[in-house]
Length: 306
Ligand code: R5P
Image 1 (tube, rainbow, N blue to C red):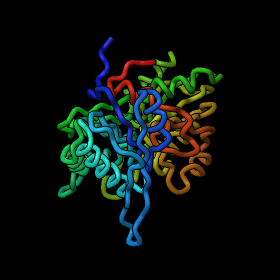
Image 2 (tube, rainbow, N blue to C red):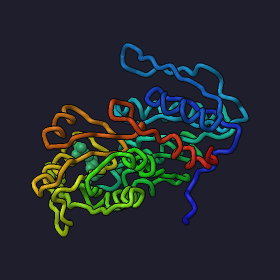
Image 3 (cartoon, protein in one colour):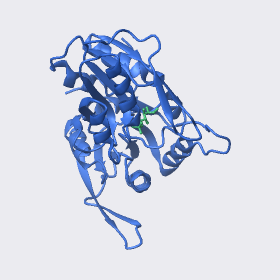
């Protein structure tokens, strides 16, 4: 078995619960038996953030700052950067836990002149004093590779598999809506002991329009499908994939993702495409966030199970 990658976060530990990730941070602190430091967020009248730590960060500790960067993305990103910087100056060491790492889709310049935003964010986090980064299912290996500090992407598949394991399903099959997610689908399928495959998605980089095809796909007729993606934002990709699978005669389609952003009318759009349920992890709080990944994050921090 391959050793799991970890970032070193030696004891004693303190967990700083950023405003976007309070629930997950509290769970992580309990799991690590670490001191919990809450954060109060207010806004000045011009919109600037005003953050206060509710207690002092212990000087001799490894301070673990937990803050996801879901919408409002840029506000949460500023929270993450400033909390990491404050933690790095107060503690012995600061580690950034950004369960949902926004901007990771901008991992290369798709069009000439585009800023590779995730590379700049990687530099900003290191500059703020983060000794390491833990995230969950970072969008791509290319995005993770922009970090010069140790950066670990903890897989959500084992936690998602535990959710589906007890669900009665007809000859289930795990499907990724695009080739980039093939490995994620294979990992979930391996945990569930079933088959997986990936559809092919094409995106027009100028208009953003996408289309999906099922070249070489196994038969899905009469089978229950788990459609799994790293994130669901507008619900467009997963709805297109669901519609295609339904047109091929599959039975129920369940949507699973690590990060449920579900912007605008994503849920309605997915229902209309024939998706019967949506489940996600708690990297992004919300009604779909039924699966806890604090255990996966703790393991990536190098904590022993239990
Ligand atoms: C793209 O490559 C990602 O893995 C997701 O498929 C995509 O970002 C989901 O976005 P939306 O829900 O807006 O289609």
